[in-house]
Length: 245
Image (tube, rainbow, N blue to C red; front, side):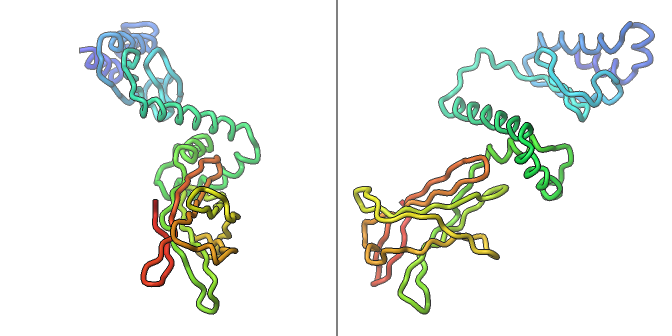
């Protein structure tokens, strides 16, 4: 019933203005009353209200967006969150904090601003800015798609090829080679190939490529999210390769 009244008031604003003063406040008041009595999530679009149209903010549990959408937020005060949900909420809060930090930092803000046109075209959306894509970048850590062991055709030297992927940019890749009991043999940064989305790490101590030794791959992005994977060296048919742990 409340939704029907709200729809009538928004659709026939001249009638509302005639009977009520001020009409805009009454519209908001009706939504507020509905919010107190209805547990479902409501959403409507109000383009004729000059007070809320084009504005963003929150009134009680009613959220106003710049695209004129009014959204009633769900009541989560009595909900019990799982440990995974708690971690997700904490991570999202950190993402929002990172977004605010980027907006306040001229250098970082310029970096994301330069990515905006390409990102908007790729996602086919226009109502985003530096803050939104910074939050998106923080919320999605890099992934390691593939790792392989490559032997140069003209030498007997081995290299580790890493294929990382990030929704914006992979900032760096670091490789460590360990013994089976965790002692460090060697480590160093992998070098990105200029025309390919892959990184290469040249192994220094070739004689340490024995079964049981471990390669640890770390990849990070601009916000500092780190993705880590472990691979074991194995020998099959006199060929050395890497096996994901």
